[in-house]
Image (cartoon, rainbow, N blue to C red; front, side):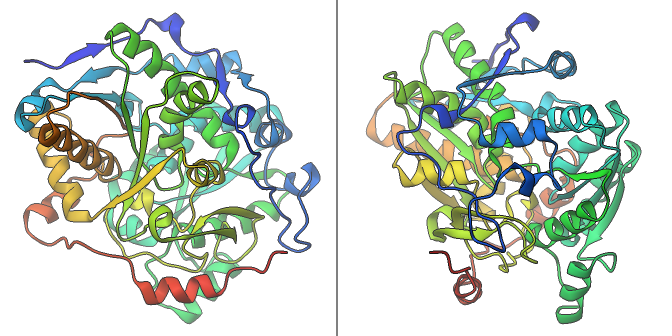
Length: 452
């Protein structure tokens, strides 16, 4: 009853990124300038991103070629393996067939290098000397730090304070790659100082950290900003995951009936499911697509689909997305990579079109699922990935109750080797099943910008 691994050859690394925008029945609502509330143009985004990424952000081409220097670095860990979780199936006594794509084999242990390497490449090509960014759990910061080391770029990372304190080893990894890591909110920026003046003990949020990173980037002509999720070009780069999945499922002689991915900003989720959604839009198979998020930060299940800022200080453009309000600060639960107030516009749009089923699970459910998965399959997932594990187990048990042998595929987007303290806290009974604060969200949503 051992797990079965399906591995592609090196030459099967995708040569193109897949762009869902080419196949959507309705275009994604325009990105708006924060001052004029009018659609942005390339010049509006130029202070933040190099033109190569701006072109990808607005592109409607179905396939965008992956530069060979990027594919060359991908070869260090791609193609990533796909496993059939037979031991987990046996433990659950389910007739379902459970598969998982394992992105934890990358050097930094997550899916994030798929876009970090691409973003570093395009910035280097544009003559950029330094990047700024934010990070929640540290997975994105670690990936970008590695990519900047490869392309000899400086990097300044604003790490959400609660994660800065919870995950010192992620911080240490970034520093070993040469990055400068600062807890956010900080006294280095006007945005950070404003938050600290009002909330001296602020645990921080990704929205605040984004404000700090953007503020620092726009002050220097040789510095750009990099984002690890949410934006179209970031989700585009992650589609190597789903393209590989399609070939590997063919090797397994199976097709997924249900796709499951955890969602924070949407990058790992989109990376796996967008190639499948595109196939369905072009007349192919249409599996159920389940997006699972934290109960304490429920953007898709409890948020509002509206135009909002991507950061707390309102320095970024306005995008239409499922949002909890840009000033909402989630509780300090351990899945730091999912503690963002807004969902990626493309994922939000697909959800509005009925292509995605959102759901949520609480922190105790996710850690219970992660421990169960580790004891069955041997891999200890990251707290973020535990959300996908939990939802996949729920679907497998539903198959058991219904007596249906469906095929379930989920993205195990990273390992939990830097999150042992969180697991120790779970076993010690220190974690709680945190829910979102209705009052705080109501206050944050009351501040949504007015857009005609």
